[in-house]
Image 1: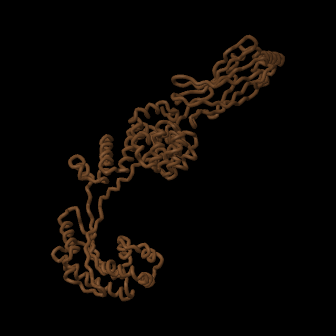
Image 2: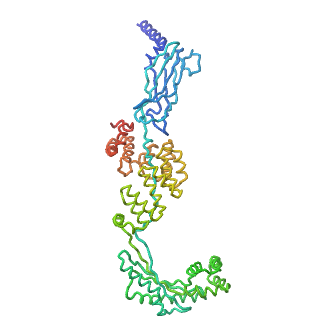
Image 3: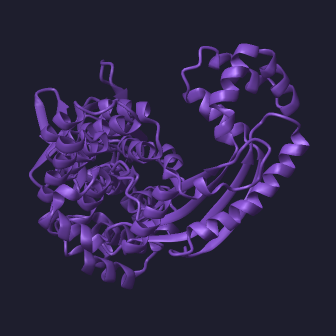
Length: 544
């Protein structure tokens, strides 16, 4: 029995020794060659597929006088992509290729392919040709990996552009004002002051406010002053006395038309603020000198002394400025309720010419039709030469994907941070990543940082993208976190759009959540393009 075993062993070893004595035998024994790939599922990173293929040739497989040509090939729907082949040689070949000894060997090689649309569903295989003397034999293809995972390419590349503020005020704060003047060192209100043009205008304004249903007086200030000449303590007392008589005068002025809201009585003392305003508005030759004195000295006494030293100037001040500061002001604080959203929508159809710039800009944000937005922004530009309207026109064209029109509109805009961001978004949509990156860098605002994150993702720089999106809650930000192995942000997305649902579905798939995958892919079906992608996406291969 032992002799039989020895004989059989010798026969097996003999066959092994001659197993690959020809290219044909290498083809026949190819199934004994082990091929692995890292990663096992190919992935698109930065527009490329990179992997390491490892081939283990068993003992007595590689013919010592053979040359093996190995071509890595990605086969995908619609075509295939080949690399330049690698060459290996047996130990008795006189050439410069990598040697694979007949004793067996493990060889690792890098493979690299540029991504081509269609590679979402593909596989990597090795095609070998054995050459020996005049013979050439094709080896059976060896599958190395499936793929490719294109999740990074899901990043939304539309970019984000912000409208300029319309500056529309739902509540506009206004004031209506009248004043009475006092004689020097007096707190008595003269009857003539109660009949002055200033008081008449104030009373007329109160009548108009009461008649206007959009206006409402929320409070009124009665403010008394003293002119900044003489001793400060006496002026303080004078201002206090004037506040008392001014309150009585206000009650007389409004007796037939009482005001709503609280009446706040104040004593300011010396009116240095009013003094500076009047001097600045005057045509006095030395007014700049006076203003400089005010800025140099904060002590009222020193101020007055320095100004009195300018005798010629002081004479003019005493005649034209100081009398106007011996006063009490009646200030009605008014709130004007602006047009509501519904009223704006009605007025742009029926009476648009009564709307100001801010109202038209606000109305443009309320209408749903893009063409109507364009019309309103053009109206703001034509009627008011609106800079914000001009820029928002460009943004609307970008959102409509009318990039040529957007560029033309941006030609007439200030080249500020928003302009650079908008130009970057246009370049991004045109797939000019280099130009887009320059514009976003020049912009430097928060929105451009978000947009720059898209470029980082497309270049395979996921950490940099995450830094730009820190604190941002969006589908793009959640996708970047998925690429980094963090799935929590995707689960927190509340948007029910197909894109956000797709991101949630990927996170669910990677966590083995079949129900989550199913639920979110139902929403994805609302978008034909994303639904077609999902059918091929290797992320969901286990859930089909």
